Image (cartoon, rainbow, N blue to C red; front, side):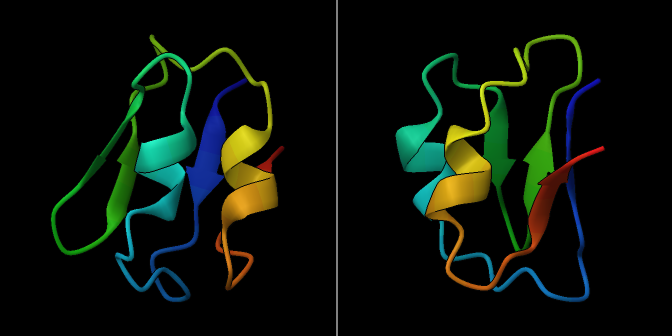
Length: 56
C-alpha cells in the first residue's frame, strides 16, 4: 500500500519529495504519491512537518 497524502493538511513544502529514496513523490500545489513507485518505507511520513502523509 502506498503512502497517502491528506491534501487538506499538505502545504506543498516539498520535504517529502526531497527525502523519497525512489522518487515516488511529485509536488505541484500539493504532494502526490505514485502508488506504483512507492515502496512504503515511511521516510516521507517521518519528514512531513504537518503530518499530512500516512501509510494506511
